[in-house]
Image (cartoon, rainbow, N blue to C red; front, side, top):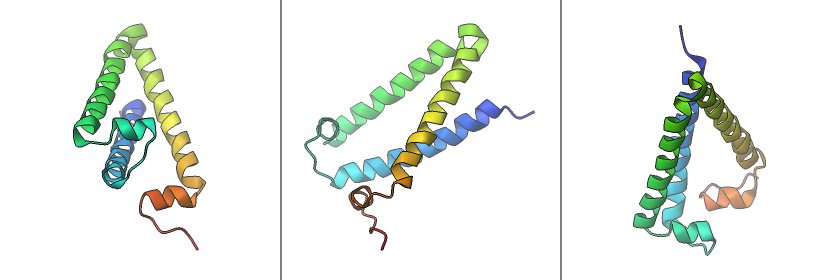
Length: 109
């Protein structure tokens, strides 16, 4: 039998990796004074942010996987996955020209 939570987790993780690639590519060429941009301006800082992010994810997995027979883990995976898909809709469905331009995508005519 296929575990639906594993399927959703795999889909969301693969999709998140795509975003990491897009954001990483965008950050290399972009100059901004926003706090997040300053924190990720250099490759070393980006590596630190990525390491902290993955450490936070690992901590969530370790802490939630043993509580309530894994039900909290399942809830966390499904909730984060749903939020990821929801925010994805905000980013791409709005079709904001400035978002597309920041990624090097020509604006729709």
